[in-house]
Image (cartoon, rainbow, N blue to C red; front, side, top):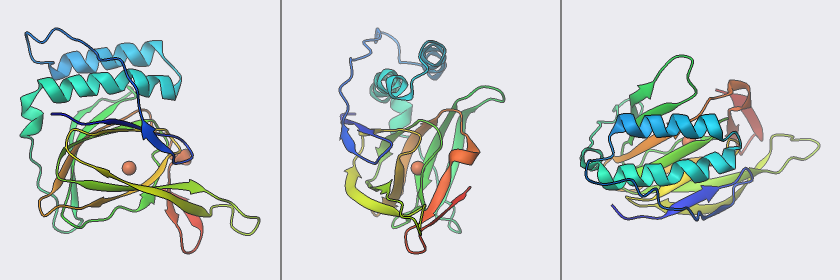
Length: 203
Ligand SMILES: [Fe+2]
């Protein structure tokens, strides 16, 4: 699965991310448990979020290219909510969550940040990301403004800094499916934003 690697800064700037290929021996598929072990090593060795993302992205690329099961992964969005989540890894007292996430065609997420580093690897469909940045005024300290849109296609990997604010929209007639990774979430730093009322609240 080909695609590009993107990095979204805390102020919503989205740029190509240059990485060094992971280069794992491909005699065997890059098994999920090895991927998780390599992730743990990175989290142990690197504490800076940007450097973590730079190190994690090639592992995710290797997983996409090596693990064919991911390309056939299917998850049915809930017709009520328009989305669904399947946890692949979520262990108490360890700061890592790995999920498959599906959005129904046309679904639009709230505008939010994650309060942790995050990686989204698109497996199926097309997902429009709109990026925002904080633009506070004296009257509205939680005011935000749009930066740009960016369309993710299958094989694209999006690396998000903890304060990167985005909104996703599923653009194709079939559900969009992505592999999502998140670090330790600090709930007091995770917000949904209302761009009309200029408010933000924890979720
Ligand atoms: Fe998100």
